[in-house]
Length: 337
Length: 117
Ligand code: SF4
Ligand code: SF4
Ligand code: SF4
Image (cartoon, each protein chain N blue to C red):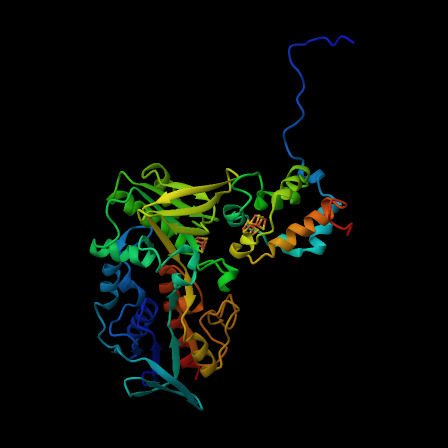
C-alpha cells in the first residue's frame, strides 16, 4: 500500500489534519493548497471559542511537523480526470499528480455580507463583519473603532434566510458572536453590548457556560429579534430597526458599531468540482456524503473522499475528527484494492 | 340583589388553554395559505412595519395568536395595515405577507370588505 498516492485538495485545518494522520500511518500524502499559505480560515481568525485559545497556536501545532507530507501552495486544482482506477489531478502550477484516492477538504467561504444591502455593509463604515472583528482583535486596529458606546451583534447574516437562498443555520456564529461580544466588552468596559438573535444555538460543550458568563460576567444584553434595517445618521452613528419579540414591540436604537455574523456558505467552485467529479451536492450546496451516518467521508463517486466544512458547517473539533476519520476510511479503501 | 362581599372575588383564568382553542378558522387559513406555517417569529415584519410604529399592528404576534386560537384582538389590529409590502421584503422565510394578511381578513372577518371565502 505504501506506494499508493493520495491527493488532498485544500490546505486548511481538515486537509492538514488528514495529511498528518495519513503520514503517521506511513503514507506520503500530497497536499495541494490554492493560496500562498497553509491554514485556510485559521489564518483569518484571532481566537477560538469556547476556550479562547489563539488560532495561531492551533495552526502552529498543525504545521509544526510536515515531514513526510508533500505539500504545495499556489496550487489550485484545475481539473481532475479519471483513467480506470487512477485520478489525474492537474494544478494551476502546471503539475499533474496521479492519485489512487482524492480527499476533498476544500472548506467553505464566508457569506458576502454586501449582498444583504439593508444591513449596510460596504455602505456604512461602522458596519463590519465577524471576520473584520477578528482582524481587529489580532491587530488592534480598525479605522472605525474608537471607544464605541453601543455595539450590536447581528446573528444569522446570510444564514436562515430564504431571501439569499440559504435556509440553513451556520452552526458556529451564535458562539462566535458571544465570544466576540465578551472580547469587545473587555476592551471597552463602558460600552453597552447587544446580541440580536432569532434562536441562540449554544449546543456545544461549554457553550452554554459562555452564554452564562456573557450574561453575568460581561453584562451582554440579548434581544430576541432580527435586525432588518440599518441606516446612518448625520453623525455617522447607525440607526437600527428590530422587533423585541419577547416584549412584542418594535424597537429603534442608535449604534456606534454593528457587527454582522456572516455565515458559512459553499465555496464558489463547489459546483464545478462536483460536476467535474460527478459527485452529488445537497440542496444546501455542500457536497453530499454517500450516507449521512456511516459513510460520511465518502462521496457518491468511488475513490473521492470528503472531510471538513466542504460537507456543511462544522466546528473546528468536528472538522479535525472528520479529517481523521476520512484518513482511516481512505486507508481501508486502499487496502481493499 | 345584594351580593355578599366575601373580601375576594374570582378572577377569570389568565392562562391560554391552547388544547381547547383549535378552531376551524386557523385550519382553514392553513389550507388556503400554508405560508403561515413557515413563520419563525423573527419579528422582522413588525420591525419595519409602516403601521406598527404608530399602532398595535404586529404581524408576527398576529400569526402566533391565530395559531393559538387567540384571534379577536389580533385580527382587529390588522385593519391598520396599509399593504405597503415592507414586511414582504424582509421576511427571512419568504412569506408572501400581504397575501397572507388578505387571506386572514377573508377568513376571520368576512363581510368587512372581504368576500366571504
Ligand atoms: S449559529 Fe446562530 S447565528 Fe449562526 S446561523 Fe445558526 S442561529 Fe444564526
Ligand atoms: S404590508 Fe402591512 S403589515 Fe406589512 S409592513 Fe406594510 S403596513 Fe405593515
Ligand atoms: S418576518 Fe416572516 S418569519 Fe419573521 S415574524 Fe414576520 S412573517 Fe414570521
